[in-house]
Amino acid sequence: MDHPFAPELLIESRGPVRIVTLNRPEHLNATNEALHGALIKVWRHLAEDRDARAVVLTGAGKAFSAGGDFDHFVELWGDRAARRREIDGARRLLEEILDFPLPVVAAVNGAAVGLGCNLAVTSDIVIMAESAFIADPHVSVGLTAADGGAPTWPLLMSMLRAKEYLLTSERIPAAKAVELGLANHVVPDAELMDRALALADKLAAQPPQAVQSTKRALNMHMKRAIAGVLEYALMEEFTSFDTPEHQDLVKAFLARSASRAAKATT
Image (cartoon, helix red, strand yellow):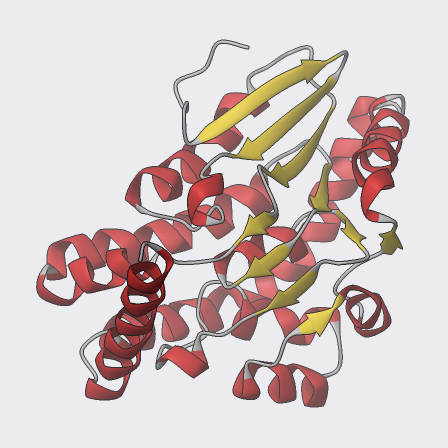
């Protein structure tokens, strides 16, 4: 399918269903500036597709999305204008997802971390492979959990559970995600895409005006609830990038990664 988002995003047509694939498998689909920009813009592109009735969102390779690219974090330390664009983009991305009229089925094929986790849980229906997990590790890398976790998780599960998982950055296995209310179904890994596509086909066969208006009404609850929280959290995340604890954690992670890569080549 012709579109302006390649190679960061792939879009495949399957009848009235569009399959959108995050396509940085060599980086576990972590979001750099290009992928983040594509994710912001793709929703309006799909909304203008008159033949589309439902979307399946998934990741290429073994991960759904590993969240933010740590090398990109370093770029944001010294470039505050780029950081402002990133924070503004985070707001726009969440708004675009919530305003998108077609039903979205997230097919979580592997790790869904940080932004990847919140892309999944702000979809309309979430199906996870048995081996997959979700996590919002913002706090563990010294950042405010702004672009999804803090604003939206308390609307999907209890406040106490949201606090526990966001403040500890603990991984949530697929079955636990269903129990908490962050996912709908767990399926064997080999069945994930078949099950996601079958559900998308079912949604696509429903009367489109009724589906889209009902989705819009449901998302009004979330939009009204998160408005003030999102603004505050994003402002604090902007500040988080300047803290020494965040920068030290990222430097340590990159050093470990470089060491592992050096050992692998010797």
